[in-house]
Image (cartoon, one colour):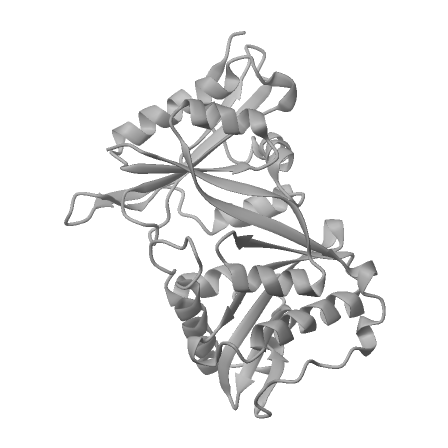
Length: 326
């Protein structure tokens, strides 16, 4: 087969790239969602080096594999954000299932190898679905080792009949309460909430690098046109945010994704995370969503235990595969 590798063209390639992403994604991606994500990322990258000579800055080149007739066979990208850990690149290769074992993945991977060498990255990370043994074998043959396992779990809301009348799980401290971000307008509170995200994000097993700065956090959350403040569940001690659960709606599948859960370290062990999780189930039930989905690192045992106790069931997740280039 004659395989041609070229840079991705926006927006011409959106339709084909979305189809490829939906081969490996847990939720269906739309062209509009891909375009919205692109709008948040600078078109031109800017890479640099820190005082130790490690790769820093941001970039996201993308490539398309096509045949001699211009038919899309696969896709690849390499990316790092300004807050990514120094030296690291995150990469992905997706091949149309009907075109596997024909050299497409190898051709795309070779482009990534060339790029990684050119920018002198010191480490590369691939996320691979844990139910895709062929891709796992592809990576291990090229020297990648499993670094982490990101479990995915899902709760069918139909299994929680009667949740609309469930009583709120009591806090250990009666001064705590649960609200949503819609109940707490104003930038002063938003800054406090960001500080909570920042502090708790660093406690997630496997987190590396820095947390995004305030302006970038706003751009990716509360300043988005479709951001639903009522899907951000916040635990308060007085007016101080001490816990947060962020939900994202997926209308196509009538589902919610629990993208983040965090509790201030000084308040842990008091049932706050569980209470917010119960509230998220109530929200899903009351609004008619079919299920809630979430991901947790395999080492995040407290959160895995809470999810399991609430009725979340395991579904295929991801392996973080890494290779040192030093």
